[in-house]
Length: 315
Image (cartoon, rainbow, N blue to C red; front, side, top):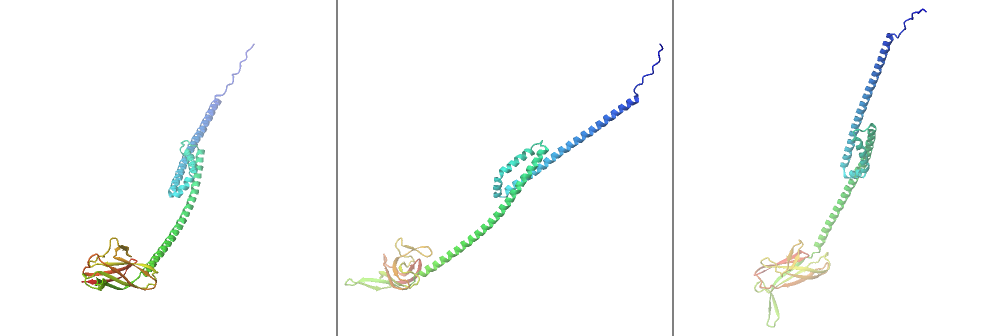
């Protein structure tokens, strides 16, 4: 049997193999290039997100610190405002606590930072509301202060008027008091020598000799006065010896109109009728020892005022 020669077997062309390999390499390169760009884009996006979060956090911290500073400023404005803020402290402290928790969290997420921003905005709104109330309180306080000033001014005017009235009243009382003071006139001072005659009858004789004088008789009138009311009038009589001292018993004093305590020698109670003159008021004084040579002065006082005086000289 005759063998026929077989045709050589056809194989895959190397050309196509190389092209396939090249295509695979190109595809792999494109894939790697695309994935690399995606990774870089993602990394860049993540960096931008981290940077944004950091920026947002810094901004939130700045806003929060500004809100806290305003809160402290409002507290320092006045006691009234501090009282207002104290009454709202639970609301403020709750917001501060929530914001602090987020701000102090280094790993705070974007959503948490947004929540912190919302809370800060709420805090600001509350502070704005408090500021409005504070302004209202200030205006009310200003109004109250003005009203207080007006009341004080009115009070001072009333006090001034009252003082003027009291002063006028005192002046009037003083005028009436002064007008009611009686005036003495018709003075007569006599140094009397008193002796008994053979029949035992006392005989009096005026003398100007100190060694012969036994007593001093004082007489005067009280002039009519239309202001002084009727009644008994206490008249103080002061006798000054030649040495200028008032002869008096221990403890005999009265108060002058100036408020000073003054000694007196004797007193005389005089019944008086308003508008009528009293004549011949007489009193006597006997010294405990002999009369001295010199001038004796008699002064008469009523209601602390000196209303008359007279002198007599003894040799």
